[in-house]
Length: 330
Ligand code: ADP
Ligand code: MG
Image (cartoon, rainbow, N blue to C red; front, top):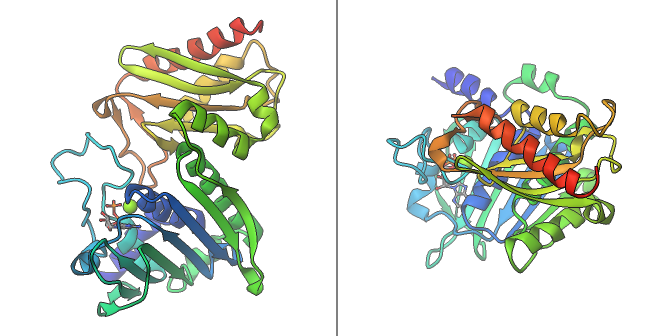
């Protein structure tokens, strides 16, 4: 059973960045307004996520670590998913591949902590914590050296963590997100975005400026289009503006950051006539629809989605962006 758990865990947790993604999504689901992530050695020796969310009641701590235990869905409604989490796999998977410590305090409760090592749960003990949840994941993949060998350099793994945090920050403008590196004992801030205020549109504009720079905000066109129950909003840069790298495409479906091929293809197609092939369009797109029109349960890491009507979504993105570009004279 332990071996099977470790194999299943490897599907969810491929690398430090995937652990960070799962933990930060949990903090967002918990209603956190401030999320602080600390990593060391590319996340290989330490990943710490501290949030000010609702916390986990002491009596629920062992349950949160049990496979397929989720407080977010009752299991009968897999197509109707609103929160990030829904499979109850992240925490048990992390507990199977690293040394996991969860300390949490729910409102009106005392703080408690629990440790899991190699899938074995320790006792729940009293702890000190003001509010919210702190998750420490040390020595990722220490029990699976083969997996450890496949990780890239600390620098590359750190960059993947930065990318994940930026994508989540872009999707959650009202949440303060900070990423720090404590390798070797010195603390460096790798990313910081303070909570935006106001309406979603203004907040998103502010967050875009923080994540993509003022020059993007100055060169971006607002999008707002609708087709057959799919709604497209966000910002697309003028074709004259290019970051040169593929990190400049932020795609979100029902508030969830995704890296979906169909959506990326649609974005490229929208710029096809106005931008040379070696350049990358810069955009932040939000596609929203009724949860029954999209299946987010395709990939274990949840970064791919399957729409009921992909052609419709593709058409919406291509025409929505082309319309905005044409309005700006392109
Ligand atoms: P899922 O997110 O799919 O429900 P997880 O294994 O990621 O599964 O988490 C299990 C449960 O632990 C969650 O359903 C939630 O109740 C609780 N939990 C995890 N992280 C947090 C957090 N940061 N704050 C509050 N509750 C949390
Ligand atoms: Mg989760």
